[in-house]
Length: 370
Image 1 (spheres, helix red, strand yellow):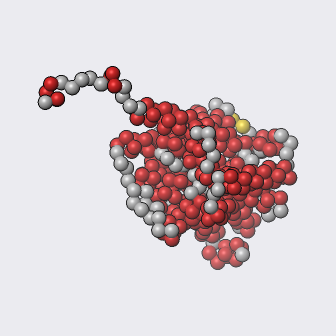
Image 2 (cartoon, one colour):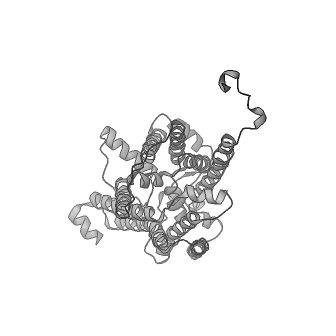
Image 3 (cartoon, helix red, strand yellow):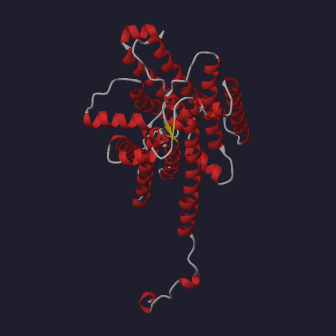
């Protein structure tokens, strides 16, 4: 089927349409399932589970199990994926993942969640997403790129077997498939324990499956095309930066899978919100909240480019192929999010909202009391 489409439309356009389709599917089901890594980490960090943690677990497990099932069936070969084949950075994964986790707590959402909310009318998420894209572009090719390169080069790891975390422990495809099944069972158990509704359950699995679909489509495109097609799936940091440059500078980008992801997710989320009558314009309530969102967006943008991906690009897509650095990034995100939630939202916020002791209140003056 892809071969016929390529003959009819050309390789670049078909690749763009595949990215658009995968993005639409993910955006639609992410909006319906309320998939959000930030919310999951907050529930976990505060010592209680909840529906957001269950949704994240099931979505993550669906991506992991779906990808490894395709590999086991011989339909997919991920050995040439960038996350495995190319040189990686342990230092970038550790520092970038932690910065991203801090940022998503401050911005109240990761890059994918901000895009989903933007399509629903959330202007806070829209502005934060734009700042995220600007910072990501700056870290990739602009003012922040020297700092990113310096941090990246602190601890490098060669591509190939040394980037396969399961392979380092002697595991192969059967072990990866079994590990994915354990994650999926854990997700189902969490869904049952926290009484997640069937509608959300039916949306969480397809949201994760969109990652596996992205791997499969780009792999099949590579098999059907005369020119090389990079093996990839969902990610948001690189595509958002590229799309921003296309809009601002009119740079001539080749149509491809990445260029379809951002508009695809936006369209899918918009359609889902429109069908559910959840479109609603929202803005900032005060200057303090705006500063918080913008600082978070900057941390996420720089952290994502340093880590080699965002909460979906590294934390789900990269982890689904057992890339060593992706699992380190994911751990850093959870750690950074937990620390930031404790310091900012529980400690500082609690300190600000604590009642003032009576003895510290000065007695009213005569002029005031009269």
